[in-house]
Amino acid sequence: MSRYALRLPESLKQAAKRIAAADDTTMNQFFVVAIAEKISVMETADFFTRRAQEADSVAAQATWDKVGAGNPMPQDQWEK
Image (tube, rainbow, N blue to C red; front, side, top):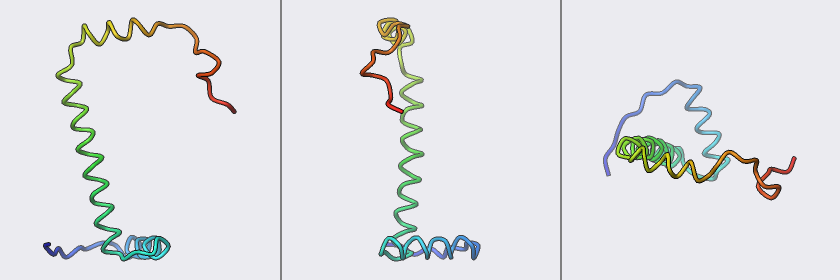
């Protein structure tokens, strides 16, 4: 495990402290989880970007053509 001195504005520190306490965890754990979540989001976005670039656009269009442009079925609509 490595150490890193983190400089952050007092307002962010206080917010992190408040949220960590409400979650019954430490600020260190809060920061570790927050960083892990951010990395996950960015790597997932990169993954889908690469997959989209590698996609066969003809096959993808053929798949969308099967979906059609009809209205959704009643069971597929959201209840308000």
